[in-house]
Amino acid sequence: MRGRLALLAAAVGVLVLTAFLVPLALLIRDVTADRATVRATADAQSLVPVVGTADTETVRLTVEQLVVDSRRSVSIFLPDGTVLGAAAPRTPAVDLAAQGQSLTAEFDGGREVVIAVQGRQDGTGVIRTVVPAAELTRGVDRAWLVLALLGLLLVLIGLAVADRLARSLVRAITDLSTVSHRLANAELDARVVPAGPPELREVAGALNHLAGRIQVLLREEREQVADLSHRLRTPLTALRLEAESLRDPGDASRVTAAVDGLERAVTGVIRQARWRTPTAEVAASDAAAIVGERVEFWSVLAEDTGRAVTLDLAEGPLPVGLPADEVEAAVDALLGNVFAHTPDETPFAVSLAPHGGQVLLTVADEGPGIPADTVGRGASHGNSTGLGLDIARRAAQASGGAMEIRNGPTGGARILLRLGPPRSPDTPNPPVAA
Image (cartoon, rainbow, N blue to C red; front, side, top):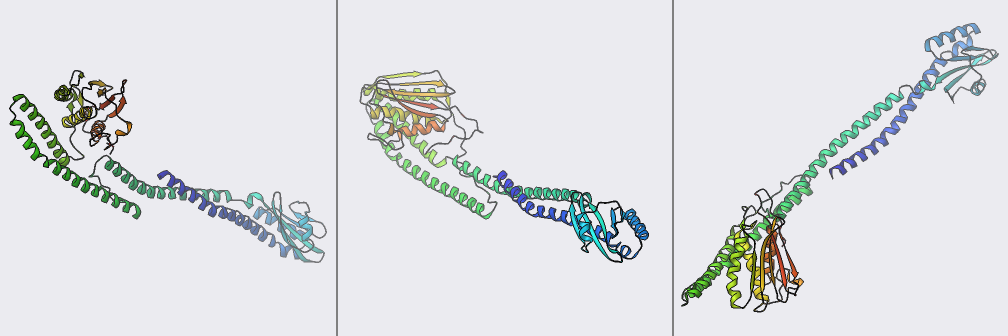
């Protein structure tokens, strides 16, 4: 934009200066030629009294003196055909002047000025002088050079002024773009300093107002999520008391562990909803340890429902760029999806291995598969919220990875979750699709 504005200013400046300087240059040329002609005419007219009244010898001496003083070619054509001064042919202009008409005529070498002198007893005399082409244009080239330099200087000044104005506009627009990108990357404290013309300042104020409004809405939403999550503590407490009252110590321990995990998840939701900021600390966790622990947890339910579990876990640690609770939530979402949407006794397999600088988690089952339109947030073909796969997808994207859903060879679902490595504090967070 800055270059285009400068180019526009240059084009306008060149057009204006051309419209002004070209006529001025032509005027200078014409004025210079007219001045040279006037000087030559004045020199020739100074001889009129002498030619009209003096004898031939006096006229000759006077003409020679004028030629020496003015360094101009002057010829006198007397009525009897005598030519005094510089030798020159008798031109049509001289013949016309011999009839009593003074004039100025153009020829190849410049201009000739002829003056008719009447009053002589023997007829009309003619004074002829020549203005060479070099004298007609003397100083014109220098004047045109000065005009060209002046025009160039004015264009450069116009470019400098246009560049300064364009820089102020571009800086204001760049600031708006930078703040917009920061807001898109969840830096909701980013603000733009209003600058530039009134229209851009108004846009900057609207963008700042939008950012503030987004902060307010997110804060209200997080408070509602935190309040809703906090309400779950009461039934969790009651569930814990019921678990502790079980007679079988094994069942009591297993149910209590499940309640503890659920309570940790609720606590994590509250903490994430209320205290998450755009500049959160860089988190990392060991995916190998978490996946192994969660598969072991779900293996108890798999045994109860007659499901065969195959675990292929690479040797850890396998660090990923997500907090441990988010990795747990993603793994639980994928494994819970298997139990929720496949019949009992359906086997499934879980594998975890490094893959191209990331960690690849694969969950495959022998169930009916997953329709393509189930990937969207809230979409479900079963009695569920439809958020499980979306939780896993958002976790993968938050770490710099992705999620892919495929169909297995026998028609079952095969979900590939790629988790990115831990990021340095200076690395911006990857955008997460809504």
